[in-house]
Amino acid sequence: METIEKLWEAACSGDIEVLEKYYKTAENMRYFKFGKEHSLIMGAFRNNQWEIIDYLLSIKETITKDEKEEIQTELNRVKYMEILAQLEK
Image 1 (spheres, rainbow, N blue to C red):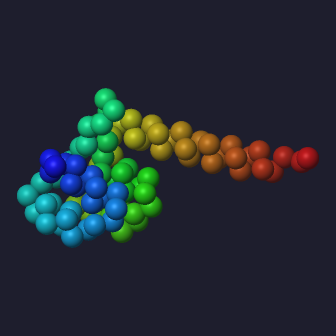
Image 2 (image 1 turned 60 degrees about the vertical axis):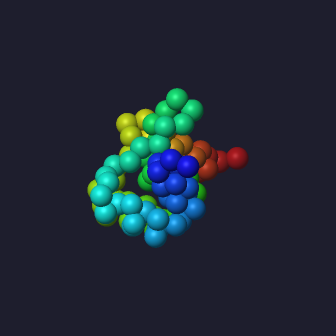
């Protein structure tokens, strides 16, 4: 298995030891799948791995432009869910 696949698995499953071992020498890793670039942060986010997100942020990992747009879309969805939930029946 390639290193990035191991790191992706570690980020998604919460295996911080694997990440800490690797990140002594690397930074801002990207996983390419389905024709797109994915950050390890979003892999952890999608799997509710909050400790992993904190760790990756602490070592200056970032998300991709597409992931920023995805987050903004979800924030807009929540905003409008709140507005719609306030409507009278």
